[in-house]
Image (cartoon, rainbow, N blue to C red; front, side):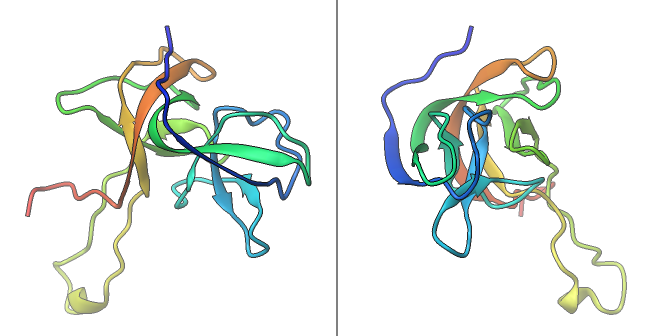
Length: 145
């Protein structure tokens, strides 16, 4: 049973047809319009309505939101960090790593997902809507520094 609380929402124009993207991660394009987020991309929040291109898009940017899962999401101690999949749905975030064993370690890029939030519920399969606490955490490391 998914839930959400009153949170912080913003309204921007949709930059594409998002009529089938309710409760999916979104980002802002170069025109300042809301579009679907892609895999691991930095997202501004989760779409709360289902606008077509040019209509007002309501985006939850803070608080607890409903978020459609893109795959099974299991819970873990401390909460399961989630990010966007290729279609803006919630999946377990890929934790950040850097190859520090080679000579070029100082120039190595960090590889991992941009964490959008923490799952408060498990999803048995793709399509299940779960509650997520939005944290906008960026890349989360695999080990504590």
